[in-house]
Image (cartoon, rainbow, N blue to C red; front, side, top):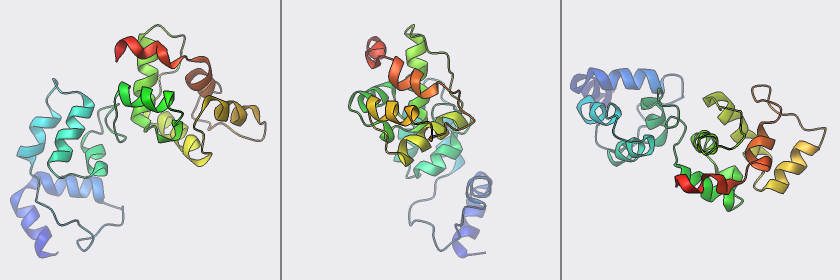
Length: 186
């Protein structure tokens, strides 16, 4: 065990749990760790447990501690709209209105559909983390950035929608839904 890891373990058992839980199996070893200050449980716990903070505010505060986005995803794994790179309804709306669909994070997809449903839109899907990730994967891999891109993609019988998604998910979110539906919530 490296000297860095020994000091890390000695300073905080919580840090060791984080290291084990969130970095195990991801190919990191002590030679690939970034050179930054150590973050301890007493730094992180008050942020994660603060019910007055939005998911994005928690992400921002954890980032200020020097934690990288993937570690933050792990720390916020129980937070449905904060555990996949975050975002807000404003950032999601701006990306949709700006025809930058492939720039949406999975969290933004969830926030956007939740916001539309809250605003009374006839959207029936409630995206899970897995579904939001599957939708984002398609947007990125197929470079879908606008309503017309999505229409062309779903109109091609050779393209398959991931099994984890409802067949009409892309239609509900990017074709039938008027993005301005969420404006009053911004």
